[in-house]
Structures are given as C-alpha cells and as structure tokens.
Image 1 (cartoon, rainbow over the protein chains, first blue to last red):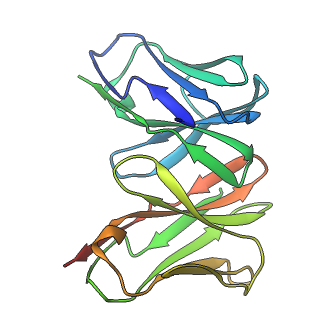
Image 2: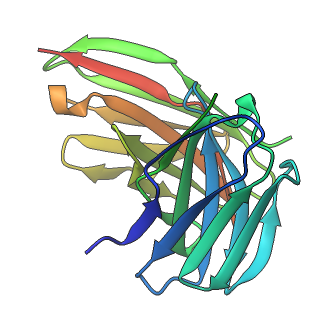
Length: 111
Length: 109
C-alpha cells in the first residue's frame, strides 16, 4: 500500500498557466507538508498543515496556495506559473516533526 | 537565519571504502538532527539524533551528534554501489525541518 502518494508524477506546462498537485496519505497522520527541491537538490519547506489547519507558511509567493480538504489530503495549487517554479515538489506526512514520510515527488517543468 | 551546511558537496569512492559525511547546523531552538538518503525519488529516513555523543547504528551506517560543536557525521563503512545517493541532513525545531544541500555520494565498483 502506498503511504504517501502524489499526482501527477510529472507535469510539463507553459508559463502563465495554473496547475494543481495532489497529495494523499493513508497513515492517519495529523500533519502534512509541502517541500520544494530545486535543481541543486536543495530541499526547502513551503507549507505545513496540522489537522487541516495551516501552521507553517514560509516565504513563498502567494501564487502558491495549499488546500487541505481533510487531514489525509494536502493539495498545492500554483497560479501564473513561472520558469523558476520548475522543481520537484515533495509532499510529506508525519506523526511527529522529526519523522517525516515523503511522497514520491512531482517533477514540474515550466516552459 | 537557520541554516544547515553539509560537506563535501560530492564524493566519489570505490567499493569497500569508508566515507564520512559532515553536517553542521545553526538552528534556533534545535531539537534533533535527521539524516536522509535520497536515491532517485523521495528521501528515506536514516537516523534521528537528539543526544550528544550517542552513536546510532544501522548495519554499515552510523551517525553521531555533537551538540556543543553543532555538527553531526554520518559514517558508511565497506561502501557498496547501492550506497550511491544524495545524503541529506536536516535540523528539526518546532514543526519544521531545515535541510542542508546534501552530499552526492557515488560508489564505483
């Protein structure tokens, strides 16, 4: 069984488009995260939700909007995509901050 | 600003060699340090260290934390080609992990 799943795995789109990435976890964890990993492999936290409530919102352009319809899902919507948004986006869930289970990642390429 | 710095950035060794990866951190309200291995996809958890001087081991991998000098090392003995990956360390505080840039390890056969 997949613990943390993301869709799509790959996303190629044009600048200016709006796209969403979905994340689901079946581990029963209360906390979920979005991370961005750039071309240099640097992994940086973007958002964290606990029980559908936003608890971490790093300095991320407001074109990025997370949405948590329930505690098993945390989706990421990106408006007006820019070239610099190209990266791998990882979702993670955790029972505690120090133990995070990562999804397989969504590779976004903005042309 | 919180930061985690890893060294070296990349490393190429031969099978059977022993490697040491370094991680230094400056994290406010630090609680723990974590090591992850990232191959082609998502990072997978290796170790969590909270106490100074206590070595954690898992097979050929071991890690230790020095909270006075604010660093941790990850040792891999008798390396194998399957150890080739990016190794990430992260400082944890509150509900956040602050990641280093990673060390790219390549083990040649």
